[in-house]
Length: 169
Image 1 (tube, one colour):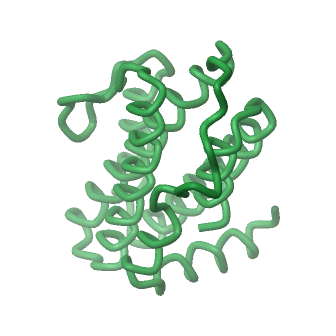
Image 2: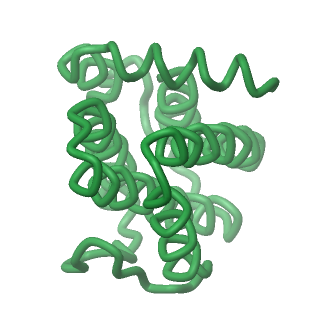
Image 3: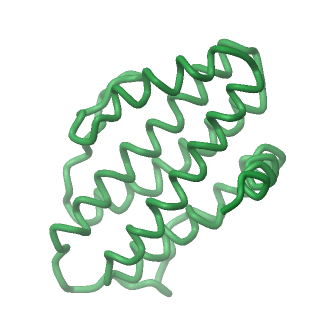
């Protein structure tokens, strides 16, 4: 993905009302029945990873929104909360422990090094409003790459549907 494409995607996300995003991540219902097969180690890895990555995105956007008083970043943070909720639904459905349960903004289980990433991104985004938007582009590009990997690693249709909706959001 080119930087210009990422910027356009980020700007489009900023302009979407939160309610539109919420509808895209609701429980897929009977169309997407849960497979009777157990989750693989890769599927568990990606569910916990994506839960923490969505929290990372939300927490960074909240921090930078507060720093720069940019309501658009607060709206994106609200969208990231919706993403977190969608992944949490899958964690609950499959009985996978939530790696971020009860954690404050900026706190992570640190299985994946997100505490350091949070510190780096908030520091970078604190340089200027333009830097904050650049951090947003980086977050979205990384999230898309990781969602593509997570989609490839699952055989469960409901999980793939949620990941695809998150990526398309």
